[in-house]
Length: 368
Ligand SMILES: *Cc1c(COP(=O)(O)O)cnc(C)c1O
Image (cartoon, rainbow, N blue to C red):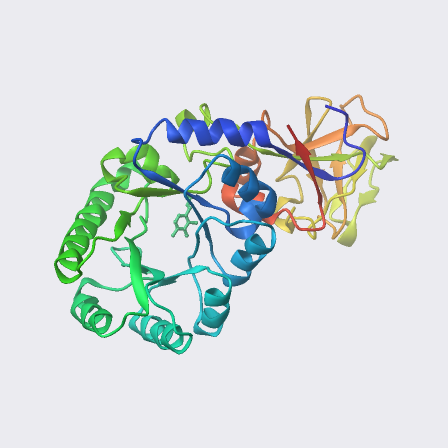
């Protein structure tokens, strides 16, 4: 791999294939695979990732917002795309672009049907989400009668799937709660099936659900984070490969006399002869200010260099007093060896937040 000469996010498609194959190996042959590619495919590159997975014959994609689905259609994605969190203002565009809405409340359910009828649709694919305990989005079991009555009166939509979302599938201390969610989901889908003339597919598992609750894979699973290389546990992380490496370069090295300060608000003060390196990545690139002042670090020539002082918009300064390094040397923020998960943990957050924060300003580079 040539050394990074500017800030760059490398996206490794071999690693993606590896993660995909690992997840597939956990599924029955007839369980469908939905790839969650919201938020730029977790901060990587949604068009790239989705096209690659489409070529591997993935069954479904999901995004959070409508315009993310539109971008995928523009990028040549023809597989079904579930929009997890649409708003009524998006419904016309959803139909125009053959996207499939998650309908999660009676309000959006009725409004979508109204627009689908106005657009002369028949059997337009929609997905119903039920709340089984996350209390974020979803119908309740009590809504089923009303849903069924409305469905009886229209030909405009057809329920392709019924789904729910687990609140704590990665946490073995919450196993009882997760099992209760799965049980509620069973009850809901069974009841709904008695009211419909057809059987929508069922799905409830996200990544940790796939790994920890094989009995709940049903007809389809929805994986995001594991495709990108994180399994929410040390044990699972061993089987997965992070697909994204964030790299940069040392722009300049400064020698600091005792009591000299570094960066805005003079937040770092040298306590003797010290050496700092300036790196072209800042909070506008996804390294939040919380990583400053010794919390976060980067890797330079295999050594940890803590971030000193405040994170600037376009730069960080790191302590390289004890590191043999030169201007122009490569800097690793995270890669397969130095995981984004570990760096995220230094500021009490999770891999999801750090990897999805890498801003669009950072160049993406494909590695095969
Ligand atoms: C984001 C999301 C997922 C993916 O979760 P991972 O933990 O990344 O696998 C699945 N389902 C829903 C409803 C989501 O919002």
